[in-house]
Image (cartoon, rainbow, N blue to C red; front, side, top):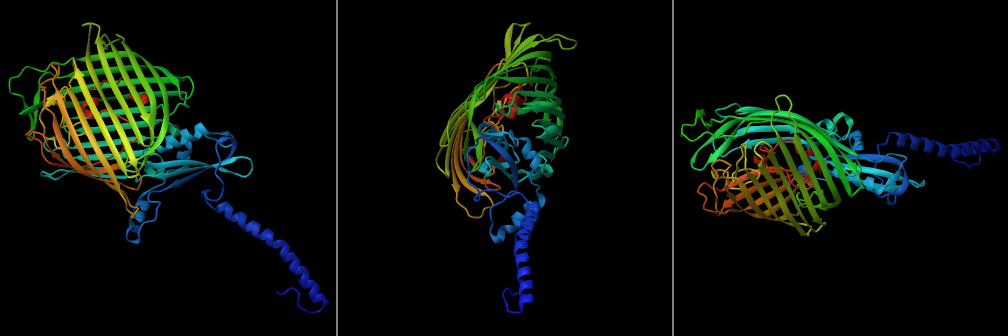
Length: 597
């Protein structure tokens, strides 16, 4: 229609009227269409549209969660099938899961400490690559918070391969973020050869009953026994929370094997049951606080005195005529006092324990103590006292960081009036990152057992605490010290499928003997040098995949060139006990409370 054409006075008046009405209705129509679009449009990032402001007491008008899948960056056309395949099998972390970890609520004043702690706790979740909480001006006197998370690759497929026949020994299959609900489920099978096949299931709920609690379940049939563990815990995530608690029950029956040098390995059967319930409360200000609590623990352990042989063809009696291995039977109920002090701040760093991923390191000091007194009730007849300590120190920043942690426990026998079962382990490390793509790591790891009355033995063959290239080592010890050095280099790539890198490393270790640990010897220093291929999938993932090529340089006759594939996320905790140490510890020390993150 043309407004202003000459068609007579009546036609002109009618035309002008219609044009006027149309002009008046057009803005209303556009506004209505825009409203309908905004109602169905999903939340989008404000970055680039609104100015970023500080979080300093403004009222929060809205909190938007933006959950990103793996491989958010653009991939080359030839590799775009990777993005499609991953997203077809992946479920994004749900918004309500992310919101449960927030200490922020709409309408409350924006608090910088709560914002930073919420972001850090999200970043520490194993199914997330990274998390950011950004603050934007809502142009109405308040702020709008955007919580952006990016998921890690959640499907777990880990074949177990060996160089000898049969090469395919087992498979570990699972999902680390089941349907986006922050639940991990894993099943495992491994060929038991002459014994039972290993069948295992693990389940972890990182938001048990919709809270910031964790439920952990492990059931496993071993080649010669079984294991069952159930634990519910509210870890001490942050100084902002008031309480932490733990409840656990479990047991196992399995052989404890002993290396004997060139003589065939023997074993004794161990039966163990435990239970634990306790909690902590915070006393003091955020950043410099004290923890106090209590727990009730139950420990029962029985060890057979007659050793036997676990041969490739099955179980055989040990006919070497050696004396029986004598271990103390334990049956104790304890009341424990839990104490802790904490003066910690967190620094966000990149490329320390991960290849390029981010993590939050603890700077400051933290100490936890457990003091236990036995209670003679019913079958619990042992009379003892128990002491456990967990000490952490850390200092540094984004360019370099030095830290140390040690965990020690001991039992005082009131009948014999002496300390026994003294177990200690720990780690000291120095990280140096002079450039974005370079990282140097120097570390020392130690473990010791003294006056042992329970099965215990260390070796350089242990997969976690020993040396590469020494898987066939037969030398046992009671104390172990391993020194490691590594130089990592990130290799630039534009594929956006993975971060890749190279590393050169050296390792050295030795063992010492102790009369209470069977068959142990003093060894000279053993060494190994090698190179590694490194990868993080997807980019910036904190799980570091590595293929190590290790060449022994010591005179151990059983040391061999080794190629080892591993994929581990070490960014959540500074130190975790190796399995050969952890299996001999008592379950009374509340490491679940003192060791997070």
